[in-house]
Length: 249
Image (cartoon, rainbow, N blue to C red; front, side, top):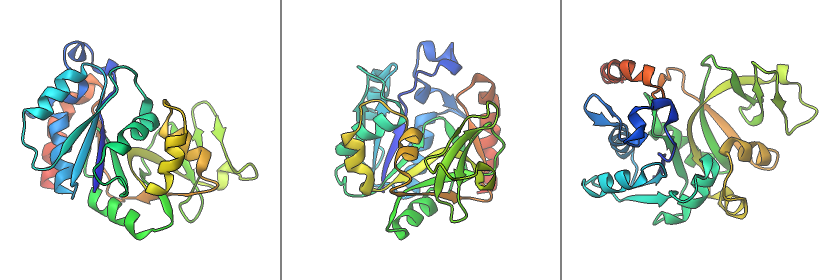
C-alpha cells in the first residue's frame, strides 16, 4: 500500500497553537497527530508513506527524520506553494518507489475507526474503479451524490442550495447523499490526468470533472466514527475519542 498523509495545511483553526508548530505536530494523548496517522497506516498495511508539508514544514521534515518508522516515510515539499488536496497528490505521486500502485490519501487531522485495509482491498478488487471514497451518512452541509450503484454523480451544498451535476439530466433528489471522510484511494488509471492538470486544485473538483468518464465509487463503512481535530475545541475530545476507539476497534 502506498499512502499519502496530507499535512500541508496552514492550521488556522488551531491558532495560537499553530503559530509556532505545524498542525501535524500538535499532540493528542502525548502523540503527535502525524505519529498517530503514521502508526495507523503502517498497521493497515502501508509499505511506504509520503507526507506533504507547507506551514513550518521544516519541523515536520526534522521530526520524520529523527524517528525510525519501520517503513520508508518521504516528504513532498510544498513550502514554496500550497497545492490543495488534488495538487498535493499530483506532486507526491511520482515520489513513491512503486508509483504503479494505488495511493491511499488521508488527512493528518482526521481521527477515527476507518477500516483502511478494507478500503484499500476494496479498491484492488474493483479493477475498473478509478477512485474509492470512504463516505458515511453523517450529518453535514456538503454532500457527495451517488447513483444506486454508488457511483459518484455530483455534489451539493445543502445550506446554500448549490448543486454540481456533471450529469445534467440527473435529479439531485433521486441521488444518494453521503458525507466525504477525506479518506480515499486513487487508482493509477487517474495518474496521467492528474499529471496533465494544473498545479493547484481540489481533489473533489477533479473527481467531479472526470466522473462521467471514470468510475469514482463510494465505500460506506456502517460503523464509521470520525473526529476532525482541525479545531481547538475538538482537541479536548480527541483523547477520549482515541481511548474509545481502542476499546471498540
